[in-house]
Image (spheres, helix red, strand yellow):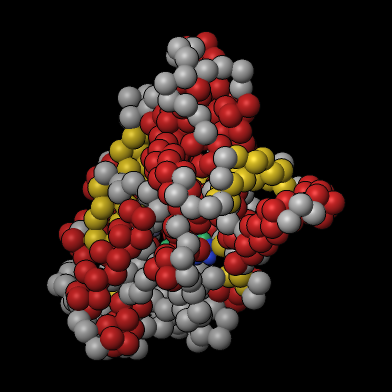
Length: 485
Ligand code: AMP
Ligand code: ZN
């Protein structure tokens, strides 16, 4: 499998440290609010990576943190703790907020068929881990105590910038725009490992430490949780692209300074979901959630398909029109799968293997999910039995997780019911692909009326009009069925 490694900025063959188990770490949500569908784009693509590794034959151990302390309103250690902000907004305790939004996050994940990682660990459960790492960093001179906080000294790293070659000064200013510089830092990019002093003295959760009562910085939690569950080395670390700097850069600095050797081999970053007005973010206040999609009548899995249709390394623009297009594609696809007859013919192993190989080739190529979706059409067009096609689609769905087989079965059942009901009505208009289009239905009914009135010229004219719209109509007893061609 080829994967793009952000740390080397190259496409590389994926080779795990230990062929028996792939160790994978994912930055989890900051649970001060609902996840927006941009966050969930990252989790969908990471879910595909995990499932594809398993599909390709690897065992995977995947760990994810839940950020319930230490993530300040600026990624550069400035501002208020996001959790406290959430608690104040809702007049609840920090722990209530954490519990509520953690549950909401996993509920959204279930709706999107995102598998729960093997280990999910809240940051507040691993304080001892962070203290152990910070103590060693203090002993070895990578960390210093200043103005009440413990900082990591980035000047001690031979190579601090991993994911970019930016000029350090530009980067520092960009990140801290509009925020006062912290005069306790020796270097602009030094970051807090342990806070005992912040401008917000009412920080809700605090723990004792060798440096005083306080709380951990955001970056240390991911190093601590990863090492606790996955040990001293990691195969793949994932996150959204905004995490590359400073979060992942700082994770690497403190982990490698602590371990004295390389920590993680592959870094996978998912580009952002944007709206026409820019990046979707929780702090901007205007963001879309899975519940909102459902309220508007969308199947969350149509959003999953929408994400799979683009490559994770390209930013993706969300619009209702784009989502509507994904819905049409999804319905057509399910209609075509529903038309396959499960009992039709023998299972053909050679054809199945060839279809599976094509699907794997798409995902082996740096997770080309849009090609993997196209492989579904290859199955539908293949010269093999319906039994083989359904088996191949069930196989693909282990990774794609679009409920292709279940949805097709439900559609088959609904169609059969509709047909039975149609037998009792004067005239039924049936869409073969499950698509709803009022304009098409009205034209088909107008054609029926013209035929009834023996106005065959008008009936033919309407058939031509439908044809020009790309609609093929077939007459059936007591009605007509149509499809887009
Ligand atoms: P947070 O809950 O803010 O810690 O973010 C959770 C995950 O979502 C992280 O991996 C972020 O990098 C990622 N993320 C944040 N905004 C977006 C976005 N607009 N599109 C895709 N991923 C995002
Ligand atoms: Zn993280």
